[in-house]
Image (cartoon, rainbow, N blue to C red; front, top):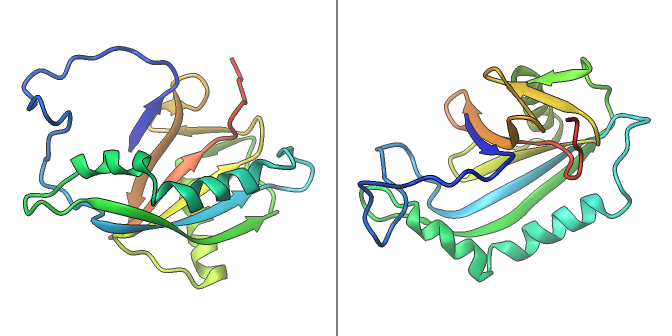
Length: 174
């Protein structure tokens, strides 16, 4: 998985071209339009602010055509193909209970599989499934946990089921 650190730590990028801060390592690239599917996992009794879901949906509606998304043009494959747009493709609120007090990566993957089955969504190299959890729900993956070692992460399972674990913004369990 690729973790987004919870605290900024300056790093050097020795050996990379001055015009590009990423090195292509031969993997697949989500070229063209990325289709975002938002899964809001909010069990009964959990807390999510009244405007949280609508603000996240607004972000995904706005980001694809914005200059902000153009930073992804540095993610090219060996043929020069790069992401160039994002579109909100679907949303779903699941009120099912969490399977434990601390979610594991396998729980996130199971929730994605549940959303695919329930909504008829399909995995694809251009589809990404974002799982947003409620406030104070901790997620652990690969020996690291949210709010202490990372703020979010993305990964994949199967052939091309690409997903991101998105703990509730504003939660601090430290």
